[in-house]
Length: 126
Image (spheres, rainbow, N blue to C red):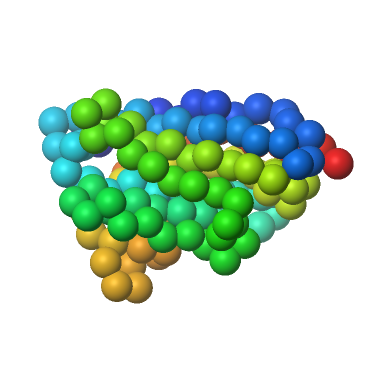
């Protein structure tokens, strides 16, 4: 079992920045790859970013490329999502997720992720 706890969500003005954290715990949590998804009201859950546990390779959704940065501190078993140049359309609940494999086309697929956090709200005002 892997437990994921997100933090850092807040209300921020457009153009501002925010950093989300995802703390993973559990006996096997350190072996998992971590990713971020988001879901706005009335919309499907959307892939945001992911990072490989072993290689450090990062992946991003098209809507956040160049603005968001995912990173990971393996010693703390924590992933971060630095969000810059925020836009009102970034408003959503952000979820952290853990996957055993994210290579190839699997990194942005919800079904690749076996464990999910409860989510943290990010609201960007115009």
